[in-house]
Image (cartoon, rainbow, N blue to C red; front, side, top):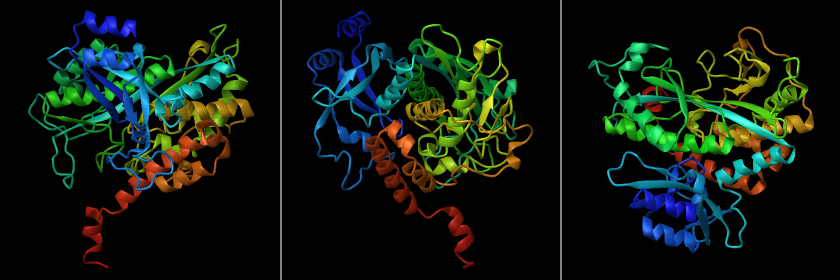
Length: 447
């Protein structure tokens, strides 16, 4: 606790936000005065109900939980000292720290997303391997919308006009929102969030931010905090930032592409390439694992009913798990690179995914491929949209595939999968109670 206490006192922090990511990636937790935080953390008194990990995106719980009922006992929160950062948009000195959850007997909470990622990374460590990841996040800026029945619109930029066309990589189009992006970069620098390049994407007021490569848990923490940062920067300018997978009917969806490679812990060499610079056997097995198991991992990559609206042919999103070299129509792209930077990009995950779960799922599938020595299909040349749509079309189909994949459930843990099912079926049932405008438009007087 000494390092945390010194960090807080040296910066004269007044309040501390203790954060945990729930199943949807929402920041939940407690806010304490700094003195109370130090005392509570030292005494193990930071607690939350375990049921927070089966809380749905709407804030509700299953009436009778099979995993962690709301009346169940508390779990203890332990702040991770490496995750403490300032909250730069507050006037008063405030800190935020990501916490891990433990049962009272000292066991980590196995349904916590951060713990799942740590367990999957541990499987690699047992083999003497170290995974390296680099996420890319797409998101939209939209006009403030207080009526959920009203379609979203692009916001007004500095020119005083809305963006009307698709301006992929447009510099002037990106400059329309420079004041927001300047806040984003300033906030990220203050929080040690290691973002790299910014580009305007294909949608109206859609952007992509790339992260520099690094440790999976650290990058998941950064993405978790980055989403919060972008939303706040946009609100400063009376604009919304949304990480919905498909916020606009006639615009491309937003992805979270995850680049990944594996290095040997002892030598530091990239295991995805041979000394001659060719793709290694281990690399092909990794891709084989992604091809076989990613369809079953879809609830972690496309976790919401809206997620599946993004996965359409010719929409800048994949529809299958084919792979290819420098091919953006496949689900698994291998960028052009030298041996040291050999990697594969998972293009299936939506930006609405919980980053801990999306990275954990991707690494779990690759690990299964390497340990089971799964051979991939031949790489695709040309347009992969000419091949069959092999990903799930909706959430319940994805959950069914996960529940029937014994190897993947063994890696993720039966209890975690049960908790995920509980949350996602609760959300799906809530969605089914909503009558959409499409139904009123096309069925009201026609059937």
